[in-house]
Image 1 (cartoon, one colour):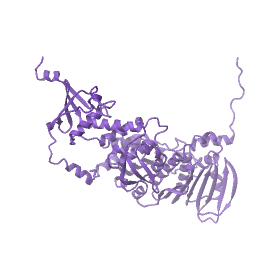
Image 2 (cartoon, one colour):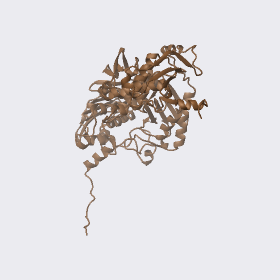
Image 3 (tube, helix red, strand yellow):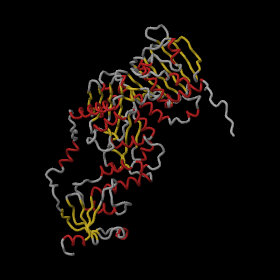
Amino acid sequence: MRGIDIQNIIILDEALINKIAAGEVIERPASVVKELIENSIDANAEKIFVEVKEGGKSFIKVIDDGDGMSKEDAELSWQRHSTSKIKNIDDLFSVRTLGFRGEALASIAAVSKLTIITKPKKALSGTKIVVEGGKKIISEEYGCPEGTIVEVKELFFNTPARKKYLKSTEQELSHIADIVTRYALIHHKVHFRLSHHEKILLDSPATEDSLTNFTHIYGKDAAKQMLRVEHGDDIRITGYISKPSLTRSTRNEQSVYVNRRYIKKNSGISEAIRDAYKTLVMVNRHPVVVLDVEIEPERADVNVHPQKSEIRIKDTKGIYDAVFSAVRETIRKNNLIPEVLESTSKKLSDFSGKNNSGYHVEDIKQKLLVKEDKRAEAELLPELNVLGIINKTYILAEITGNLLLIDQHAAAERILYEKFTEELKNKKVSIQKLLEPVIIELPPKQFSLSLEKKELLEGMGYKTEEFGNNTIIIRTIPVLLGRNFDKKIFMDFLDELGKLGKIESLATIFHNRIARMACRTAIKAGDEITLPQIKQYIRELVKKNIPYTCPHGRPIMITWSFYELEKMFKRVV
C-alpha cells in the first residue's frame, strides 16, 4: 500500500509569487503600455508620450505631465497591492479610476528592469527609483520635470519561458499602437504621442472637439462619414458611429468604453450595435464605432479580469436597450443618402432612356457557331449556337438536344474568380500599374500591419511603399480589380491578414474576399456585351474546374431538353 506523503503543500517564494501575479497582468509589451497609460490618465496628465524600441520588447518609456508622486509614494508604488485608488471594500465596487488593483507597477517590476522618475507639482526635486526583477537597486533624490517617467527595459528578462512567446517586433508594435489609439480616441483633451525608435507613429494633439481628434487618427475621409451620438440620461451614450456606407470586414475599428475605460469584451453592448445596424449593412460587414457608455460605477464590475479588459454590467437588458436606441435614433435622424460621385453619375446616365423592362430577345447579327479550337473543346461542350440575349442578362444558346441559358454575370464571376485564385496559388498574380499612385493614411495599427505583411500584399497584387507617418503609397493593384484602386477591398484584405497566423492557402483564406472582388469586376445584368465577349466567356468557362456555379453557389447555366419543350407544347405525350 502506497504511503502518504507528509508534506505536499509548500509556501511559494515571494519572488515566484510576484512573477505569477505579473503573468496575470502583464501578457506582452502592450499590457505594460496600457497599465502605464491608465496611471497617467488617473494622474490628470495632459500629455502622455510613449516611446518604444523593438516593439516594446527591449524598451518602453511613458512620459506624462501629471500629478507626480512624493518620495514616500514612489517607494510604495512598485510594491504589490499598493494603490491610492481604493481604501476599503466599498471602493472596490464603486471604481471611478482606470488603475485601481495596485498590481501594475509591481507586476512590471517583477519581470523587467524598471526605472521610475517622478516629481509632484511645486516640489523642489523629484525621486528616482530603479528596480530589477522585483529588487530595489537605487532610490535617490533626482532633478526632473513635474510628472512621471516610467522606463521598462528588457521585459521578461528573468522569465525566459514567457519571453519566447512574444511575437515579432511588428506584431508587438501593432498591439501597442492599438491600445494607444483606443485611449487617444476617447481622451481627446490629452495629447498622445507614440514613437518607435524615435519615429513618430501617432501624434494626436489635445482638442476640444472629439471629431477633430478622430480625424487625427483615422483621417478626413473616415471622419466625414461619422455621425455624432448623444443619447440618454440615466445611461448616457456618447461618441460616434459610421454611416452604413463606411464598414469594415472585422470589428477591429469598434472602440467601446464604459465610463471612458476601454473594454475588449461585453456581449450586450456588441450585440446592441450589431442589431441596430441589421438590414442597413451587408452580412459580415461592421460599422466603425467609438462609443462611451456612462453609468453609475456601482453598476459595473470592472474587477472580473486581471487586465481589466472585460467588464460585467448589472441590468444587461437596460444597457442593451440604451445602446440599441442610441445607435438607431442617430441613424434615423441623419441623412444617409450616399453622395453621388461624378463617375457614378456618368455610369447611371448610360442606362437612361434604354428599355430594361420585360423579357425580349435581342437579335444578334448572325448565329455564332463556337468552333475555334474545336478539337480541344469538343469534349467539354459540343457545337453551341448562340441565339441571343434575354433582357441583357441571360445568354440564350442551342446545344445538341438542349436549350441553354447562361447568366452572364455569374459566368464572368466564375471566370475571374478561378483566374485570380490560380494566380494566387502559383504566386503569379497579374498586376497593373496605377497611372497615379494612391496615397492612403492608415490608423497606427493598420500601418504597422501593412509593413509587417508587405511581402504578402505584394504577392496579392498590391505593391506598397512607406510614405511618412502612418501613410503608404500603393503603386500596383490586381488586374481583377479593374483600373481603379478600391480602398474598401484593400482594407478588408489588410484586416484579414491581421487575423492570420501561419498561412497555408491564401486562396482558401480569402475565398469570400476574392469572390466579392470578382463580383464587383464582372459584367452585371443589364450590361451590354459583344459577340467576341460571348465567345471568350464560353471558351473560358468550359476550361474551369467548376463551370456550373458562381463563387457564391448560384447556378451559372440551366438547360431545357428539346423533349421537355415539346412536352410543354403538347407535341409529345
